[in-house]
Length: 131
Image 1 (tube, rainbow, N blue to C red):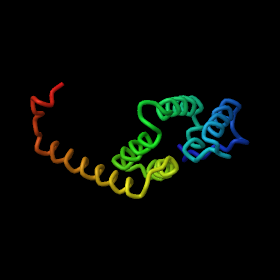
Image 2: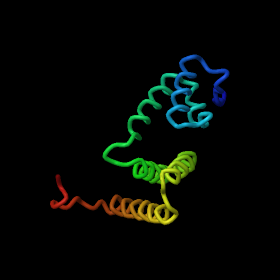
Image 3: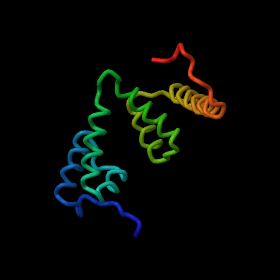
Image 4: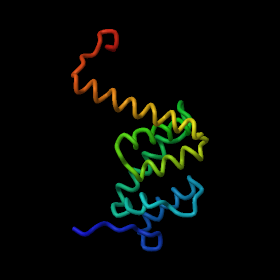
């Protein structure tokens, strides 16, 4: 199988163009980023992913900054450089300060370290923490 290529708007099917148009309108951007252009190789996955992301990331009980910071933290843990770049930018646009970023990275690092220690030692869950 050959390496997938990005799908540009001018080469996209009407279904893909409709999703691209919704992304551009929703995000007030002139073009979609590479993530969406590559997902456009599978229009069903493109549409499903966009609809889910749009729903999950809309303002709710958690404000957009908190959601972007959570997304960033998970992306760091999953070692997704594209997602780290994308959601760092989105979090900064939503108001994340350099100090908040520093604290977030400290929490991510500490959580990863202690999670691995717990898993390595096979620490049983305390009865006080059982739900």
